[in-house]
Amino acid sequence: MAIISLTIAWIISNIAFHLLPLDSLAAYQPVLTEILALLFWWGLDKTYFKSQVSWAFGTATKNWLYLLPIIVVLIGDATLNPSFNFGFSNIILSIILGLGVGIFEEYVFRGILVNQFYNRLNISALMTAVLSGLAFGFTHLVNALNGNFGNTVAQTLAAISLGFFFAVVYLLIHNLWLVIIAHAIIDAFDHLAFGTLSNNAGTSLTTGIIYFVVFAAIGFWLLRRNQVSSQFVHQPGMTVKSKSHVNFSGS
Image (cartoon, rainbow, N blue to C red; front, side):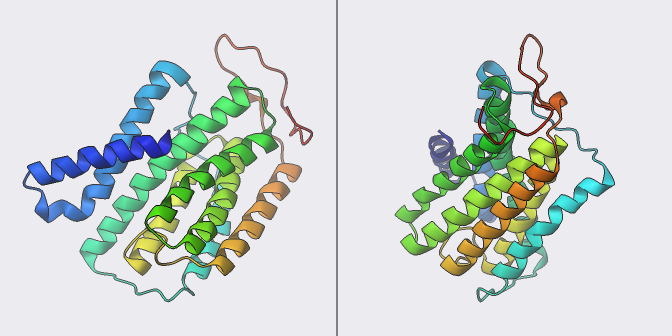
């Protein structure tokens, strides 16, 4: 459904940019697409899913350490023949695009999906993170239609592991903004380095496999060392089993 909503949003934004005098802002069309898709999911969540997404920005200082692993992605992508454009307008575009993509994708795949799997379906923290990562990764397979198939496989592997890691972080700290920022940093960096977020650049099977192993390992390690607070699952009118400790055996 995420792919369908993005496709519809892209069609609407494409029509808007053709009918309105927005030629000078053409580079921002992907941002409008992300905003429209976000509004669709926000409305769907408010009327149907009713997830309790934690948008509170405040977080303990130590929680910012969860951002450190994304350095692996920045270093890895920097080895893939980047051509950085540090022009002021491109920096602004990269930041806005990174935030737009980060907010939409983290809201859907962490904010909504994690809450639905963990809260409503009462699935274990481990399986919740795995399913969130798989859902996030598999949506990238559609890029094979317009890009290199090998690069799509690499991008999907990286997306699965990063989605798993971001879900673990969200489960542990209950702060969607932290994973949004992590996601935005990666996408902004890639747009600065390659001028695109497609898999035609900045992707390789080697780095995809490395990211898959690294972030899967970090995610599993974090779940084994920490516990998911039962506070995360409390919703009005809902009775759930205690999940104060992470269950690795399933729901």
